Length: 171
Image (cartoon, rainbow, N blue to C red; front, top):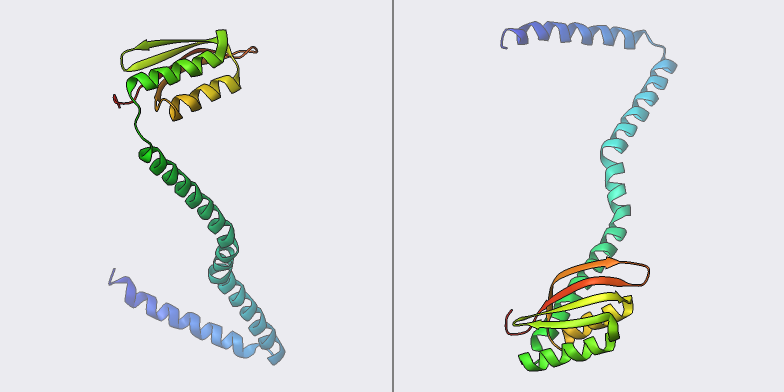
């Protein structure tokens, strides 16, 4: 590697001298035109390498800030919901099972509840979307039950399958 450095210096000096002779051979008007062209090229390179990426970042910042703000609001909403759920009074197993039975009764003949110790299984047969949603909301809020398994199939008439929830105190 050191052997190539001394060989390179005379070549660079020769190239520099050749360019200096060619520059001197240009007419003043050609030198000015070449200077302007080199200045434009340098300005383009500076713009492309430094200014344009920063400009893009500045233009994209408001959109990114809005997305981050929306995510922050979601996290705050979830944290408030979590605090609210923690603050709610616990319900007994009897109260939870009664709440699940009442919610199941509102489903009519499309739902059948089976209590199995710490778990409750809701068997569905063509239950409506709204009915299933209402049952899940009531199971979570009134019975404090936590869904652990869903095996649902959607048909034209509604949902069929089963929903398994864990009753409070066993979580």
